Image 1: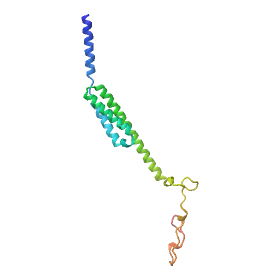
Image 2: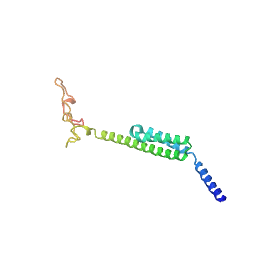
Image 3: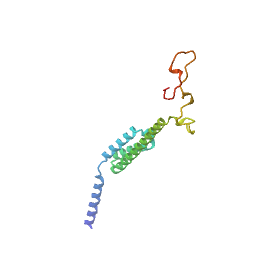
Length: 156
């Protein structure tokens, strides 16, 4: 009976030693902090505030777990913080890309926001007043390029 107790005691001490030998997740904590900084640079405060805040809170909780020497919990929280920060970065980049695409569409089709833009035949047509150059003001004499009508391209 004594050798069984010694074996059980030895096994439980061995398991306790293994549990305490979990390395500190310092690299994971650093990677999480770096991911949060990248999310902030990507505009996560504006475009993905919930994910960004979650990442910051989980990193703070991971730091607290490290101070309590709860290394497994700290690693798990740091991994979650990194995932939240990466999600915030991706959402921010997507929002930025959508804004850029919208700006390009607006530049490509400046009449898109005008009231007549959707009317058939309205696209690509210049206003009637600019179809020909104005004639010379009255009281001017002599030959001038103002005396002859012009086309849109500016050639007589």
